[in-house]
Length: 247
Length: 244
Image (cartoon, rainbow over all chains, first blue to last red; front, side, top):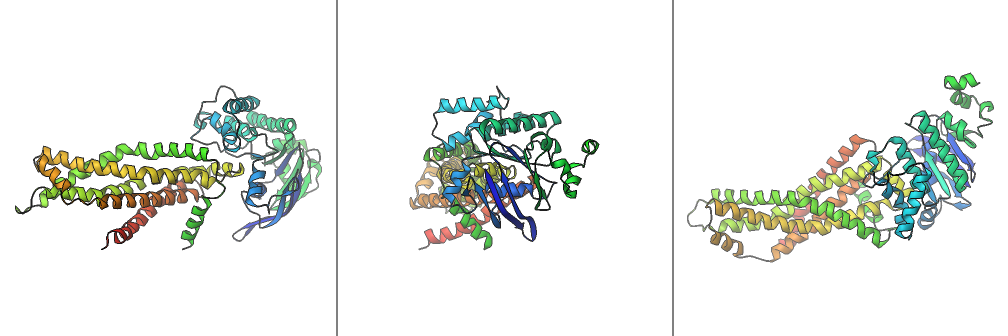
């Protein structure tokens, strides 16, 4: 479980996050949603330590991550898997080397064992026989799936996904969402997904945290989001025709 | 001063939270091939022609019949060892390798590849930059030696083929009043220049923000800053190591 308490962050003179608190549960896909530019990605970066919050604390299973020393932070980070918006695959490495990378750097595993693990993860995300391809030779959806394989190869306790289906066609986007949910349930990871896609919200939003202008306005699940009673959330949820017709 | 402070902190960050020695060993080998082996042809080409041109131009300016012809190769030798091999080649090194380092790391930065390393608990600056600096410091002096030899050989080739000097005169000039300290001077400069170019280029790349345009700007900045810094340090090294 991940707990965030009163996270605030500002850049120069702009307050991006103001006192955001929440809990992300183990074995569930926890969504952070909101319109573009509301501070979702900054919040995610504060949680994983890529940005230092101005105030507030992040706990990973009761371990204070924000105030931890470098060694402790490094230890916690080794339990994190993250899927980036663009995949963030290493250009100079093949798919196999990309997925194997965390094992190469973080473990003492024998080569054969690492290869088995890589093949298992690639198979798990529905990719086979592309081990020797370079990232530039595969599609955007495949890059995302390789990114997921790399994120789970070291059996992380915490999985973070930043806009996992942005720039993908609807079918591939749904496949990625389903994959994230399956992996979360299968490996009992604490998964945090940042998204502004309502299909993802309806598909995998087990717990949802709505961020508006840097503040948390609502917390709930996909079952209650339609009747939140929060005007800003309603504007967000029912912004497209399909959702309005559902209403 | 603020930028210099950030640069010093960046250098400090290379030495903390390091990875396993085996990881660096592999990376240093890869970088050495990338930096050293793949630059060799350019260095040979440029230095050979510069040695050849120095021979022709020295001969053109040597009008007095009282000055022996072997002075030409002596000039080529000293030019090559003092400036051509370490300094001019360092400028070429900054243009080829430095811009590539800044561009490569800058692209990794804007495509979140560096963030990916950090999230895995890896010190990205140490993992990416330290092997590049070590490989540069190891390979550039070797390239300088190759460039020096090629420049002298280029001068010999043109000098003897065009009849500017005889082979005997050329060899005599190369050996005349040779001070082995000049080699030590050139190699010392090459180590300092390699460190300056690689560290500044990586620093510029690592602090890239924005998109493709900014990566281009970072590459250009890396070359400009490296060249200015190495020219300044060239003067100070000359004062430090050659003043009597």
